[in-house]
Length: 249
Image 1 (tube, rainbow, N blue to C red):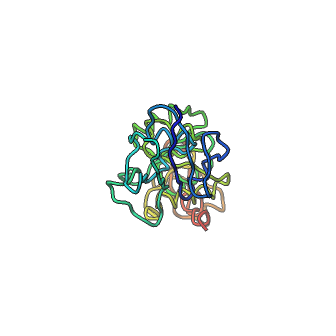
Image 2 (cartoon, rainbow, N blue to C red):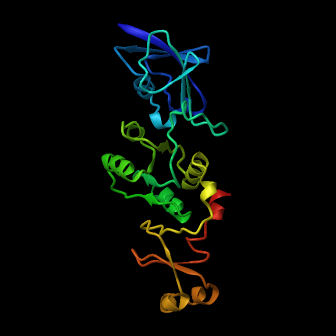
Image 3 (cartoon, helix red, strand yellow):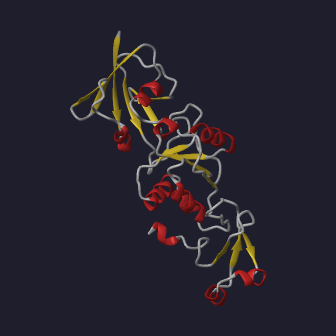
C-alpha cells in the first residue's frame, strides 16, 4: 500500500534533493508530497531522499519537535531544518549533538589539501589517502572526531554522530565552510601547532639546535622555529605554522 506524507525542507538541505525522484512531487514550490511503503522512521525517509542525518538540526511534525525515531504516519506534515547559523536551538529540540571540546576531524580520501589547511590552524586532523569508509567511521567513533566528507553514503552510516558534507571543490573555500560551520574562529590563534604532513604536534626548538640544517636566508631572517619529531620537518615564522591568515581572507 502506498502512503503519502508532506515534507518541507529549508536552506541548503534542498541542495541534496533530486526533485526528479519518482516518489517526490513538488507542490506550489513549497513542499513535497513523498510516497512510501511499509513502516518507516522519519530518518529513513529523509535519508532516502539524499539528505544525511548529521546535516539535520530540527524536525517539526505539525509544528511539534520530534526525533529521528518517529514512525511516520500517512498525512503527516514535516518541516526539516539544517544547522541554523544564527539561532541556537534548545538542547531538547536539536538533533545535532553538541561537540564537547575543541573540534578534532577526520577527512575522507578526497580532502587531502583541506586536511593540510586545518593542521596549519592547529586542528587535530586525521587523514590518509587510502582510508576505507568503515575505518573512518570506526576512528571517528573511537576518537570522537568530526567526519568531513564529500561522500553522502559515508555520512548516512548509522554510527556517524558529528559530520559535515563538503560542498565546494576549492580547498580554501572548503576551509571557510568548516570554519563557519563549527565556529572555529574561537580556537585561533592559540599555542598549538601541527605538522601539515603527519598531524603531530610541533614543539618549539632553539635556532642553534638546527642551525646547520637551515638555508642561508632562513638562517638570516628568522628566529622562531618549531619542529616535528615524527617526520623531522622544521617550520619557522612565516612558514606553515604561522602562514594562515590569508586562507580566510
